[in-house]
Image (cartoon, helix red, strand yellow):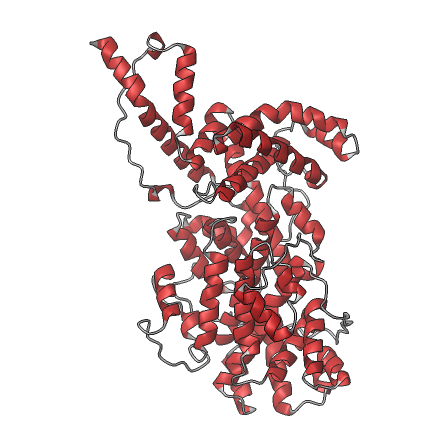
Length: 592
């Protein structure tokens, strides 16, 4: 069991069959990702390259790192898994418990103790890690290959712990109690280096001509980021990381590229990772988000020009990354109340987990920024906690507030009032997205069912109508994606990237009604509207037909106000051009 619904895994799917072959079963952590098999592929690839491949460190030492770090994180699932693995590898039961409590008393060698000291510092206080910590490991006899594998094992633990906290899988074995040692001392702010004082380890030359992952990074980023150049002692791990990027970050069938980059940016800032903040600000800039907007998202996304749904998405991922022990099913239900599906939730968890892996890895190897950071994140940059209510003083009164309160109080009949009040608007919006009467009618039912199921989580951070239209938009979007042929409506890339160029925007007659009856004119406009690409069709429906405000329409579509205005302007031009053949020619005949 996990927080998300489970579906049957295809036993012939290579990542699944490889897990079955190695473990003798498919661990529940991977079963919990079954809604998106590509996420399983990403997680299994990293797990296999880092943990299962025996190179400089034997499996026993890597599992010891995982156990110590998972215990420090308080993650019962990962503690249980590593405890069981080490038992099978022959490590005594008493020694295992001591590694999770205080590894200094576990009877390990001085070198092994130093390695776990290093891993725990990287896990808990990564921005304070420096070249001196690397030098201390070398003095204990560890070479750069071994140190890199210890860094990778620590990053993997963060990755697996984030996944398990976000997905809530049941332990595969009898759960182990987590016995914490005394709280570690807080690092001195004067020793803060921010994880960019390296690179710490030696590297070898890998040519893009003979190393496909570097070709992939060149195509995606325009250069090979320093974080990957710093890992050339383990090309197989770089290959697994490239696979994770392909499977988690590149698809847009649920979360958009901009949404994912915002998650990466916010979580990296919370982790005080200046390198990754600079990288994701640059990625967002390439997608049309200004540096000022990116900086605001990094510092405090709640003050940024984002929709309420996207602010909720970032609140969700931030809590998972920074306070995983407080995370639970209720957080998923809360996010779903903004219209996000379980697939959206799974992808958000996977992006957050991959981000924590990369953040830990970067600070361990000390990769220097590829672009000049706008700011350096330090101990004073604590991310503000989520507010209980983000409504501002003087906010517009929600006319649906009374009905919503009655429904939340148990008056089911009050929900009929909301259905009656909003059904026509929801239907017209879904028709604008789907362009099909039967599909739109089915989607209306789905929308109100989802709203009823999650209305208990609605907290009034936006108007009920905006929340409901967000659910409707996501419902229609999901149906479009299931068709596997239409473009994404939540593609927030810069509107200037579109290929459309108006060609026939002639002046229309002052009185086209003289040539067309009102019914005929409506038929032409509706026909032209249905021919537009879905993302332009829906913005016209929301703004020009349903008369939503710019702020409400932007919230529904998950766009910033500038992006909404650009899309609406382009949509109006497209519709005008489509209708010009009727109205402009009619005007010419009238004037001749």
